[in-house]
Amino acid sequence: MLITPILLILLAGGILIAAAYGITPRQAWRSVRGRVEALEELQRRQARRQELVRTLPDFLGNLLLGYGVRGQVLEAFEFAARLGWPGDTLCAAVSGALRQGRLRSDKYPPLHAMATDLADPLLTDLLRLLQQAEEEGGDITSILESYLEHAYQRKATQLLEQAKVLPLKLLGITVPLLLPTLIITMLSPFLYAAAQIWIGG
Image (cartoon, rainbow, N blue to C red; front, side, top):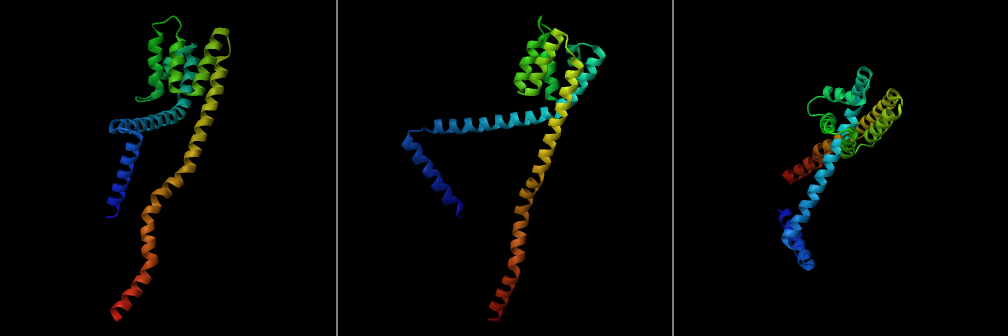
């Protein structure tokens, strides 16, 4: 009953503010839609980043294994991408970059573009170091082992942070469910006494 007048007051206030600043309904709708789209894009990026933190250690492990077998960085990337499961964002991105690279003499730029698009600093830095090591004769195995260890540490940190937040999420779900029960339990003796007085009187 009380919600409708409040909504009407808010709507009237919004219309008055829009009229005062000369904002048309189309502009207002575009502004709201733009903010919603920006929020959705931010949520997509955060979800993709969490997925990369989770999947990168396995990918790097496969990359290290592939390099040990093939002895070539790009072939190791192909090997690691083939081992990924369907729907894995990282493996799909690497496969796409490698397909683009086959048409070029320098095969690294599509991989660098892929790492930039995924916006993972660990992957971006790793690709730069791998290309430099391959061109200058560096120890690629040591680089991969170092980055693999760092990726596992980052994944462990993310899992620890999620474990810390989980009780708060559960509490947020539980409190609204338990609060009415707690209120009824606390007030029931008073309500019972009031009913007895009412009936007795």
